[in-house]
Image (tube, rainbow, N blue to C red):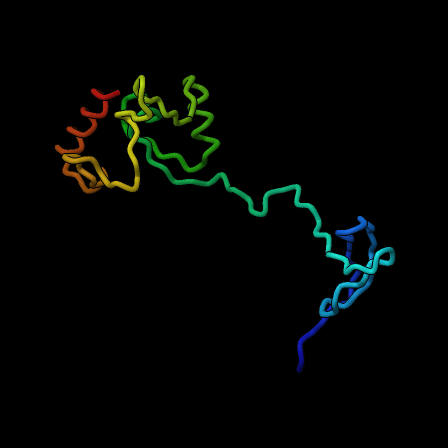
Length: 145
């Protein structure tokens, strides 16, 4: 069995004179010629007024600093809106801002991701650290804050 072709109405426009037409054609045919200037018409694609994909609200994030429980225990969020609602209640804003030192474009708080960890920095995630190392990292984080 051969390939299937469709016969449908297609919107066409002329790139020379601007003539517009809706013509029924087979999908495998050459574009029709403009009735005004005889130049081949080009297909007009419908404009997309929405995103091509849906960005969901679901997430699975464990927050250990900032939006954790009032006692300081880590808190799990399963939706972005839940996390945003909690941040709004506490008067916090979720954003990242690059603040360079005066006279330069560098900041001690901004790290280039293509260079790897800074010398002396431990690149291991918190889950790989011992409880003592986790406590030390949390204390360091609170000192730098």
